[in-house]
Length: 312
Image (cartoon, rainbow, N blue to C red):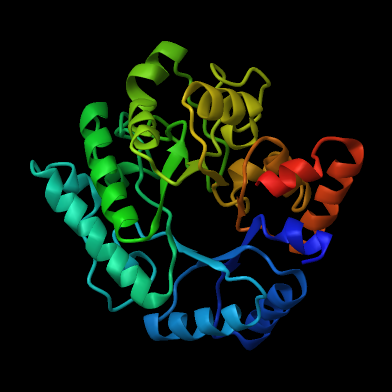
């Protein structure tokens, strides 16, 4: 790969509107020219998804990592597939081995499709009943129970050969706004974060989860600069997740097309800032050529190094 293509390996492109010929041709040309590291599948028929995966893999010199938001299985994105229960329902199950077996079966279905990464489990503790974006996606409001369920789900997926991604670090459970639309504020103290929000992520990292997703939320107790999301905070990623919690797997941003990320700047700039903050993979980059150019500028100015790029 060229230097630019090696940078592109750190970006995952969204696969949407696959039946719109113009949009799909544009995506194919991005994959061919720039060689991104992965793709994120959105709503489409499962048969079409298999065609698209095979087609885009044939355009890529290295295997694309194929990912999906499949919290309740393939049905979260694909019609006419039997869904697994929402996390809130799973939270009420007493026998965690059932959740492990569910993870195994999910993994089997993902592998049949050619998918490698499931953006799950949700490890957020649902401590705010007015939360507009987590709700039934969480295993519940008790940190110890959320921890056990998230670990069982993760172990099922990973034993089945699918990368699990714990989200949304450091905890999106106590927000009353949606990070797709704005930058939510979590005004917890460090003590409250340690008791309520962080235990499930600690449990997942201790149990060997392969990846963690950073959240577009503002947490003043962890990041002193006003208006900086956790997903762009070295204090959150490098200090807390890497050093204090000892996590050495992949750190993936939540989608950077969300308003909670756009507070950091235009497409391209946000991508470079996300990598400089400690993320390894930027998900849903909106302008891949601009992202590559901005990363090259960051390398020239010393905000990023080739050593860091290679490490990622």
